[in-house]
Image (cartoon, rainbow, N blue to C red; front, side, top):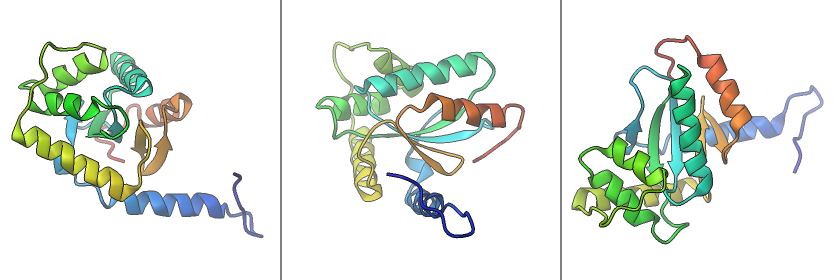
Amino acid sequence: FAAIYDKNGVNITAMAQDASARKRLGAIDERDALVIGPAGAPKVVEFTDPDCPYCQALDRFWAAKAAEGKPVQRLVYFVSGIHPDAAAKAEHILCSSDKAAAFKAIYAGTSPLGLAKCGAGAETVARHAAMVRKMGISGAPTLFVDGKLVSGFQQAELEAFLNAKKGVAGADP
């Protein structure tokens, strides 16, 4: 529950966490992500659940930061094993003609009359679920920001990341 330092003051715990994060990032196929946000903005890898209240708050945070001129490009992967309707809602988003709008609506709490279904969406949700298991992700939101694992909606940490990236054109963590 605490960091371990060697006799030279090197944080061994942080080194192990960074190595673990890099290894996990290697398992991610960016082609499988739902991309939300402008190209050229700093990238954030985000594992999310449509029914998670913290994930919904994180989505509102990203929208507020974009309105302030601090957008990010989110590489979104769905965690569908926590809430019972998460997989169906993720499939709905992935099967929609305007995925970003469907994502925004679902995360804003909208419940469409019927959830869209399609083979490609179901297959993507299944691939996301397999990747989540392989990576050992057990909660949402889980993010990788600048190659660092961020568990949960850690607003101060995300603010620091955005402030460091502001004005860095094409920054790609």
